[in-house]
Image (spheres, rainbow, N blue to C red):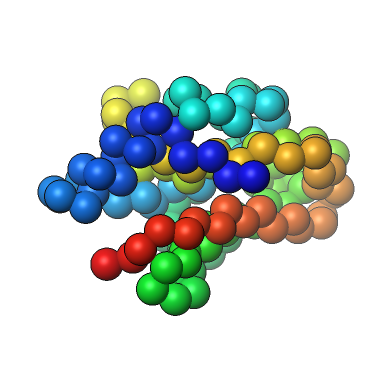
Length: 130
């Protein structure tokens, strides 16, 4: 199940009413940090932004957006990495000079990313899209 964090709820309200930075980053990690108060992934393994070919934000209709990140063992993550969380951020979660917001987090049973194999992780976001 995908959780909107408390900071994410505030972000969404701000995004509707002002010029808040858009969601541009996705990240994968390990841990079980999916709570409404989460501010980061338990242990971030990789993050990327929407300028990269492995990070996509796809609008399905006026109510649904999919945030997608694909990672390959030995490329974006270590071979054999166990991924158990994915998050969507406004701002770079690896840049300490940026005040990023974890908007959505999804935890699941860990998925092993074998060497040379690509796994895709998706967060379905069901909110009205302007």
